[in-house]
Image (cartoon, rainbow, N blue to C red; front, top):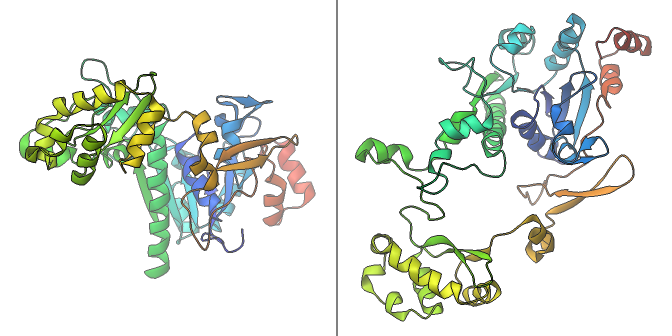
Length: 397
């Protein structure tokens, strides 16, 4: 990973499943050395989630790419001692256990920061390290509910719905990666002190909720579910074409709205002075959406896309993954990487984002086999083959 932006940064990961491992995946993609600590014999449960290739999840190969897998029994004093030695020489440690678990293991902040004063400890949990809910279990679904996302997602006459991915965990992971890098920057610039980055999943979601808080505080306004409509911003909606395919049209800019109305042969709406700004359009949203629905419903999706793109109106069909695989923009930007699997086969995986022009991220290897790097990492600690064999016999690794 030469010439990568995080080259030389060492990360020890104690995470499982999504939030912690996604955070460290981002760091690993940009050159950090990530050593993932896993339980001997079982490892991260994500290894067997969703679709499997043989006995290994395809998701695992992506989520753990560029990471080293080391097995350690953290219920063993020897395992904890090895973990402390690894962390003593690390820049970042990431964990997403329930608050207090690391302390019970003997790997709490007080211990680790005494060993390594420059350490950045990233702690992801459902509700954070403090507060009355700190000891409650909290997954991404709970964070999405408590953080406000679920309440505003769906249709007003139906129960709230979820996104089709673990969005709460992923949002928290990105905040965690950002927090880790800010803490490293502080350490480099302001004297070398480490610190804790405390990421609560519900707060990570809450931070994305746009104007929810000030609108309620000033006006008592509670944003409700509005289906596919973007509340207060018109027009932005999903429409169904004659061939039953769905297209999304975003024409809430003043000039764009006028171009859209001309494209759908509604010059009366395009030239109506009341509709020249968003406030006027939002007051007449029902009439505007009825006009768009009528026009889209009289044409196949391909025609809708062709005409609106020609009019420079933001529009897209609703992509499935099959659509992505065939799309020239995805292909031109290299958004699919081919990963070599242990059995010699290959599988395509998402490309690395964001794009850095001089020091881009990259995939060096897919998610490793359980414990694939244990011996190499222990040898770096100065352990002999006999010592490593003894650890294996005692169930430490």
